[in-house]
Image (cartoon, rainbow, N blue to C red; front, side, top):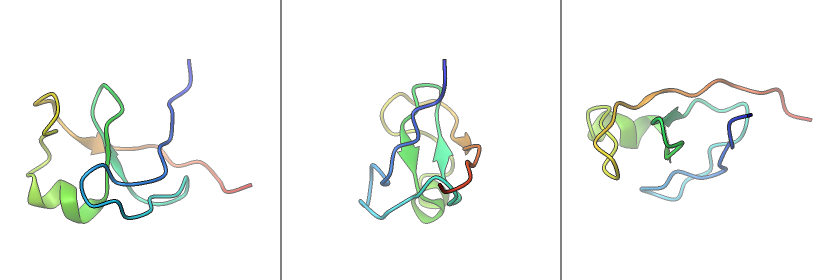
Length: 59
């Protein structure tokens, strides 16, 4: 099962494309770098750790 790479930060709405740096929790909640830093790498939805999302090349 592949990760669903969401295209925008769930907190601020900024774009996070497939080759952009973004962070996710185990439920695939997605956040930009700035919001992740602000939230101290803790997902506001589940309380889980936010980790760097793998990147995919743009098509």
